[in-house]
Image (cartoon, rainbow, N blue to C red; front, side, top):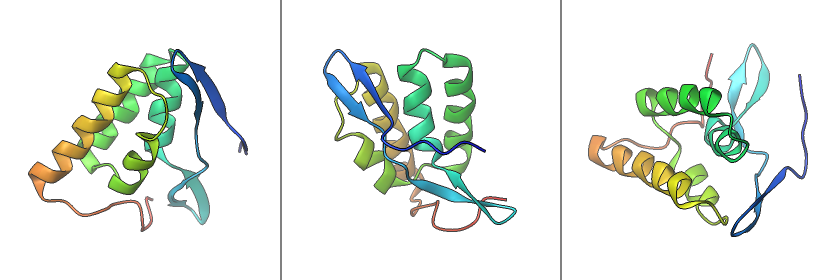
Length: 104
């Protein structure tokens, strides 16, 4: 288990601060937000892991509040578009906000 506080990555637009948002729980242990880790992996050029998370979020939905929080950061255009597409997908599907419950 890793605990990371004050996680930030420098981008061309400035320092992108990645908040420690809870994504749910697994076997009673809080898990990290997949939306935050999608962005982190994109910014670290770990596209293999980012692609897995992007697929998960497309299938299960992204939490709009988390995505909107991340969009406040100085993100590269491609990452910003990917997050906006996740929000648009939720709107088209008429979904609510996931992530408040358990993800087992």
